[in-house]
Amino acid sequence: MRDIERLINTYGESHQNKTNILIHAVAVPSIFFVTVGLLWSIPVPDFIAQFNINFAHIAAIPTLYYYFKLSGPIGAAMTLLTLLTFGGINLLVVAGISVWQFSAVLFVVMWILQFVGHKIEGKQPSFFQDLRYLLVGPAWWWVHWLKRLNINY
Image 1 (cartoon, rainbow, N blue to C red):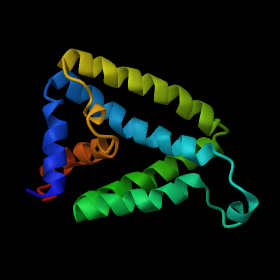
Image 2 (image 1 turned 90 degrees about the vertical axis):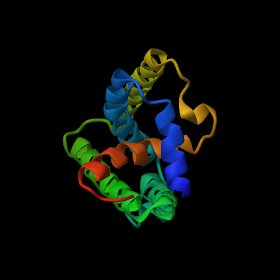
Image 3 (image 1 turned 60 degrees about the vertical axis):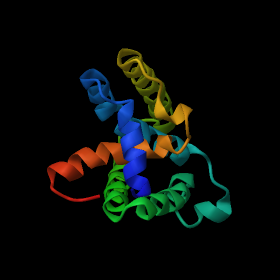
Image 4 (image 1 turned 180 degrees about the vertical axis):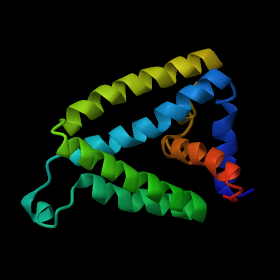
């Protein structure tokens, strides 16, 4: 069994309850978005800022590398989510909304929802076993979409 299949299957074991799945369908991509937003908000030194990049851009490189290492389709899907996230953050900036405040509030709300989902499920979150599952969550979210599109991951 490939590593991605093992990770997705193990993650899926603690995500069987329909309510928990629904909560995760909203919370997982939201947490991805706001985590990127929080990284985006960390001030960068001038030698980095001169290239018009921030810590979110820098963190995206090894993160996407990890996803591509797991699976090409997952890597491509996560690249799309990352680009959409960057676009959404830019919309917040254009709208004059504080990215860090928006991200911090939504981060807390979405994690509370996740824990409510796991309380309903009756199982602990997978990342309590292995921190990699914090990255597997968005891949798991994409697997549902890839299957619907008949794309093997």
